[in-house]
Image 1 (spheres, one colour):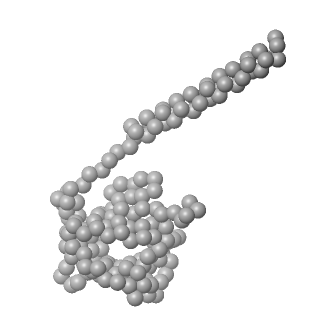
Image 2 (tube, helix red, strand yellow):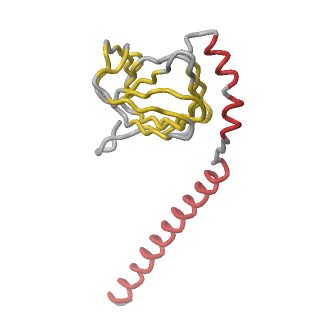
Image 3 (tube, helix red, strand yellow):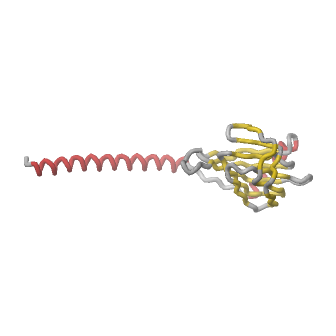
Length: 180
């Protein structure tokens, strides 16, 4: 066999191996995607469904500290919750999670920015304080949507006789380097 034929034959074998590896990798990805597609789900909550679901949260809040919440669905980098408050909450700061609120019912004032007063670590990456000072106030009512970035102090303030029900999406945020 000539050198030229040997080189051509070797290139064909390498090309065939590369093609086989590419087909195998693609097939594996397609199978994995198919499995993922079969296990993925979408969630839909109407305002009336959330209000109905919040009835038991209202009862829990009445027998406790004026606040109750439940996790609805958990995903790899975010989760959804439903929350009810009939009293003001503590100041909060989540180092790695942004909060996205959709107000379902009621009225409250959200304080954002500034700093936590009397901050204490409650869990890794989570801080709570007696309140928020130096922030800005936003009046919230049904239909409003709020995004609170990770690391921003915030506090939900509920006036006496008022309450608020809100849908929460907690999204894990990463820094520019991709770490948490």
